[in-house]
Amino acid sequence: MGIRTIHASVITEAVAAMCIEANCVLPQDVLAYLKQCRDEEPWQVARETLDVIIQNDELAASAKVPLCQDTGMACIFIAVGQDVHIEGGLLEDAVNAGARKGYTQGYLRKSMVADPLRRENTKTNEPALITTRIVAGDSIHIALAPKGGGAENMGRIGMLKPADGVEGVKKFVFEALRQAGPNPCPPTVVGVGIGGNFDHVADLAKRALVRPFSMPNPDPFYAKLEQELLEEVNKLGIGPAGFGGKTTAIAVHIEQMATHIACLPVAVNLNCHAARHAEVTL
Amino acid sequence: MASASETRHIEGRLDISTRESLHAGDAILYTGTVYTARDAAHARFVAALDRGEILPFDIDGAIIYYAGPAPAQPGQVIGSCGPTSSYRMDPFAPRLLDLGLAAMIGKGIRSPEVVEAIRRNKAVYFAAIGGAAAVIAQSVRSAEVIAYEDLGTEAVRKLEVVEMPLTVAIDSTGANIYEIGPKAYLGSHSEENR
Image (cartoon, rainbow over all chains, first blue to last red; front, side, top):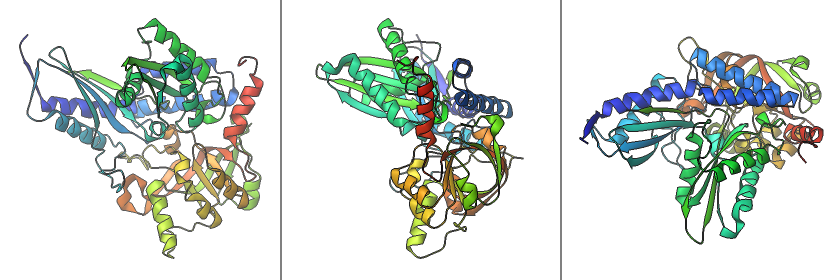
């Protein structure tokens, strides 16, 4: 296979367009799940709250305005084919230029501070939070998930014992949702990472949020665990906006990987009901 | 708990008797003035008070909305502007409530200290639906930055709102929708959940 050349400006334009699209138009599969949850919700206040959320998402898409004022950190997952050559600039610079352009031209909120303790807003929403992997092929795949602060703050990492097993993981996820209560803007999408180490498990949990709703975990053991966790979490009674009801979570997605003989890392990363997502292959 | 059909309209200043008439779970539509302030603005409020300075608006009887709006598009009064999580303002809220702050609008849990300050001052904490930012923006008729413009989205804005949809989250007695609501649901669906 020969080397394919992709210009940095193509990456910048793609990221800019995705920032605007993702923040204004909720993916169809997420909206469909929200409507299904609304139809299956037995509690009146919860149905009314879901109606407002659905109305909001349809209004945002038709008026091309952000679903939520928190247009988030631009979390960007890039898979670069190893037969790609990028010319005209650095990959990360091209992505950041795209985020700057999208957030500025799209009237999206600039929510990033340059330093965690001195806290001066960068006024451009840079930097994007970029995770890059090298993969086979001669294309670049870019997934964008604008991530709000409210749900992000309710994330948890636990370094469990191997003996804690499936029950330990279930308890950890349930407790994370219980403690989060109304704060992460339920109904949430629950991203669960299991395995790896301290840092990889967090990445797994976040990647789990980007997986399309129509795709359960390909391993039937974990697909079943996803269903069990969703049922457990929806017994909490927190409900939409935390006002009470069945629909505390819309979906649970698990990503797992190998780990050490001594370790059972687990991470929970929550996404609010505005589970925004866009992707492109260049 | 109130359903949409029982929604009550409330206008203007929230005097003590109005606040006392509101109960956790009530759905209301508020028309009047609210001031946006979130993390960075609250830090500045407290620093100003520590220096003996006055706040950028009269806190006595005021309503603070924990929100940082998206920028207005051409022709818009304001961009999408839903609530942010309130607990981050908990370290500052009791001091402002003791100075006469009538109400806060946000989302999510408050600390026991804030609940006690709400009760002590017969104040009220309203929840707006997190993420319903495009819908909420439609109730904003005017928006003006009145302080801390350098903070961008975190600047203090004076908003005139018409029929802003809110739920009473914590009332002047300390009753709390985040406890009452889930409990009521679980109580009525206990068989399904056994």
